[in-house]
Image (cartoon, rainbow, N blue to C red; front, side, top):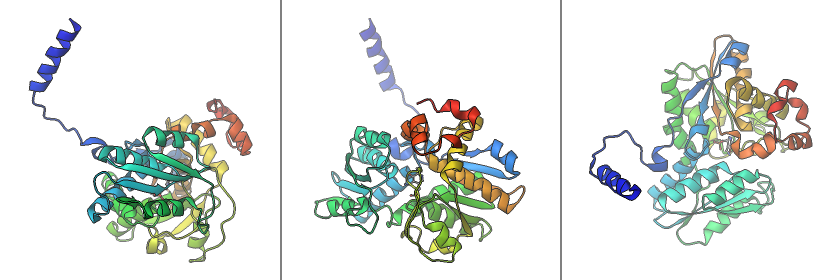
Length: 359
Ligand code: PMP
C-alpha cells in the first residue's frame, strides 16, 4: 500500500510543472542576508545599531562570500578546471565556505589551519569532505605559517589553485559587489558609520569601499580590532606598523600586516577601536539574553565597537556592523565554564547571565 502511494505521488510530482522562486543550490542561497536592528543596544546608546546577519549564509558565516568570490575568480581566470583542487590557509570559516562550494562544484578541497582553532571547525570541515591539515600556529614571517604551507602544497599539484584569501582581491571585490550593495539598499543609503573587524580585510575593505564611494564619503568606515592585532595602532598612528603583542580568544580576526585586500583602503578609514575580550564575552552573552542571537566572538566584538562608534558619532547616528557567524562552531569554548575560567573570563559574564554557560 505504502509503495503504491509513493509511486502515485512520484508520478504526480513528475507530471506537475512548477513555477517557483527557488535558487540554484549552495551558490544561489548565498547572500541577501537580513539586516537586524539591535534594539536593546540602540536604546542604550541612543544610536541606531544594525547587524548584517551573515551567520545566515548557507555555510554559516560571512566567509561563504569570500569562498565563492575566489572560486568564481579562479574559474574565470582558467586556473581552476573541472575536477581540480582548491587549497587554502584559513582560521576555519573560509575553509568551511570553500568546502561547501567545492562539494557543490565538484572540486577537491585541502585546508591548512592553525591548530589553535576550535575542534568544531575542524570536525565540520572533515564532515564536508575537506582534507584538513592543522599546523602549529606560527607568525606570518615563518615559512611554516599555515598560509605558506597552503601555497607550497598547491604549487606542484596539477590543476590546483591556492585561493590566497588574504592577498587575492577577488575576496574584497565580492563584498564590494554583493554585501555592500545589500547594506546600501537595506538602509536606503542612510548610514553614518560602518565598522567591523578584519582577518583578511575582505569584508571591511569591500563593504567599506562600496559604502564610502556610494555615499560620496558621507559614510565613515571604522575598524574594530581584537588585542594582538596591529591595525588599530596602524590606523591611529597614521600608518606605523608595530610588532604584534598580546592575544585574544576571538577567532578569525586580528592582523599583523596590511593585506592586499585591505590595500590602500586602509588610508580611507576614519579610525579604529580595540575591544578587549572581557567586553566581547559580556556582549556575547547580552546579545543572547536580550536579542536571542547566538553569535561567535567576532560578532560580539563588532557589536561592542558599533556601540562605541554610535556614541562617538552622536545621538540618532545609524551604524552598521557585521554578525559574522553563529556560536555553534565555538560552543565547546564560549559556553564552557571551564574554558572561560582557563582564559580568566568567567567574571566577564554578569552573574544573571552565567546560566547560559551550560557546558
Ligand atoms: N569573523 C570571523 C569569525 C572570521 O572567521 C573572519 C575571517 N577569518 C572574520 C570575522 C573577518 O573577515 P575578513 O576575512 O573578511 O576580514
